[in-house]
Image (tube, rainbow, N blue to C red; front, side, top):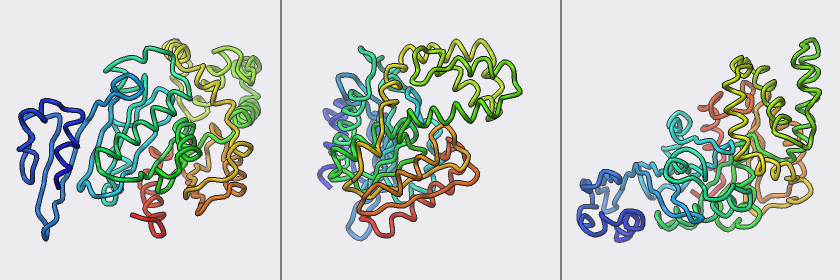
Amino acid sequence: MLWLVPVFCLAYAPICESDSENIKAGSKPADNDVATLGASVTGLRIVAIDTLLTPEIGGIKQAVEIKTEDVNKPILLFLSGGPGSSMMNNADRFTGILKSRFTIVQWDQRDAGKTLKLNPSPVQPTVDQMAEDTYQVINFVLKQLNQKKVYLLGSSWGNALGFYIVRNHPELIHAYYAVNPVISQLASEKELLSVLKVHFKDNEIASRELATVHIPFQMDGDLFYLRKWLFYKDGKEFVTSDNFKNNFLQWSKAWSPAWNEVMHIDLPKTLKKVDCPVYFFVGRNDIQTSTKITERYFKAVKAPKKDLFYFDHSGHQIHQDEPEKLQNMILKTLGGLPS
């Protein structure tokens, strides 16, 4: 397959100059940044890849990890939650089953994970900027792997980026997987605040701090207290420490503007019809992104194909709480879709 050599040339010039002849079945290039493994099967070449690429996306280098047993398998690109978080380091836990059917692609977004280590964003990230980053990453991966479309999965905040692609570039998507999605976040945050006030009505400190929260958020403390008591409700007692508060407020300096943009997302009003299959995955115990709001949107949105999957033992982190079921439900959707 002659396109294999340019696949790696785009990001690794040293390989292109001296090692292009080594990228073939059963061989390994001298530069360990790229590892390939090939085998000839009835005249067809199967190539496995486990590599980290650092293309220029949106004016900075960004980390894109590709793992596959066969480059001919369709691409599944993950858009991690956060913002400012990475799913890359623990991805094997929730992609092990999926590797049987997909080429798995993880991307560390601007100011997150390996991309942050490569280079901080020179400007404060915005939703529009990161949506454009997403579009560029998709096109980069498609070109690298010589494919026309991707399966796209957004987790929590990742849906702010994913639904941008669904709206503007459905021709690039086989199907979209919306996991604990951001649908109408302003309404969701208001619902969360009400739930927490009732839950902590007998906790003097929680009640006092939650009473100061304004929605829409007016200052960093609004989101901090809301998340502090949400996490505390989930059993994370470390949120009462000064260290947690300092780290959260540091995160807030970078990400509050983008998250305030997310608060304006209202898909039931702005995206009533999509032109690709869309599948919703919700945790029964998720109160961070309202399950009820997702249910209502699922019923209303028009799509070529759609479904809603519930996870009875999950909150807002389905990929951590029920990774095996998540993967099996994704595979279940492939029955009527191109693969």
